[in-house]
Length: 250
Ligand code: ATP
Ligand code: MG
Image (cartoon, rainbow, N blue to C red):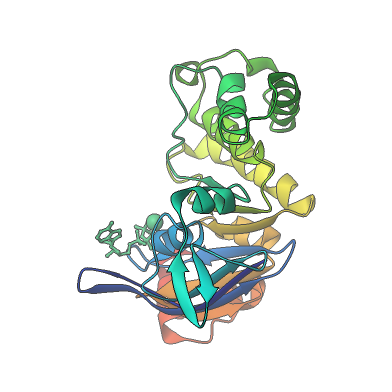
C-alpha cells in the first residue's frame, strides 16, 4: 500500500530525511517511534505531499505521489491531481483541527461534500454511521467546544474516514490528551486496525504499538535505524540508539 524509496527531505540546508526506505503492506499497521526532531512528522507529511520530497519516491496504492514520470523524468502534478491522490489518504494530527463553527456531524460531512461533491443524504448517512462507530452517536449535534479532547479526536478520526481512504496516517493522535482520554481514542484505532485498515501511526504509546502494530519502526536523525516485529524491537533492540531511546521511554 505504501512504498518509500530513498526518500530525502531538506529544509534549507538541514537534512531532515536522509533516505527512508519503507514498505507497508495492505492491511498492515506500522507504528513509528523516535526522538523529537527525528523526522517522523515530516515523513508522514511527505506521504500525502504536504511536504515535497527532495529526492526519492513515495508510492501509495501503486501511485507515485506528487509526480508523473515521463521519459525518465519526474513532472510535478497539478494541485488538482495532488488533491485527487490525497482523497485516498486520511490524516489525523495531534491537534484535532475541527471546524469550531460546525457540529460533529457537519465536520464529518464537510470533506466528502466539498471535495467529492457527494449528495448530502448519502454523506449524512455515512457520517452518522461513522460517528456511531467511534462511539459518538449521542454527540452528532454537539460543537467541538462542547466535546472532550478524546471525543474531538474521535470526531477527527470519523472525519478522515468519511473520505473512505485506503490509508490512514496518525501523527501522535493521543499526545495532546489527558491520560484518562487516551484509551478511548486508542480503542477506536484498534477497531480500525482489526477491520483491516492500512495505518501508519506515529506514537509514544508503546502498549498500543506492541498489541496492535504489525511492525515497529525506530527513526532517529532522519533515518530508519531499525524495523521489525514490535515485540522484537521493544524487547530485543538490535541497535545502541534504539536501546538508548527505549531506556528513556519504557
Ligand atoms: P516530534 O517528536 O517532536 O514531533 P518529529 O520526529 O515529528 O518530532 P519533525 O517534525 O519531522 O520531527 O521535524 C524534523 C526536523 O525538521 C526538526 O529539526 C524540525 O525543526 C525540522 N522541520 C520540520 N518542519 C520544518 C519546516 N517547515 N521548516 C523548517 N524546518 C522544519
Ligand atoms: Mg512530530
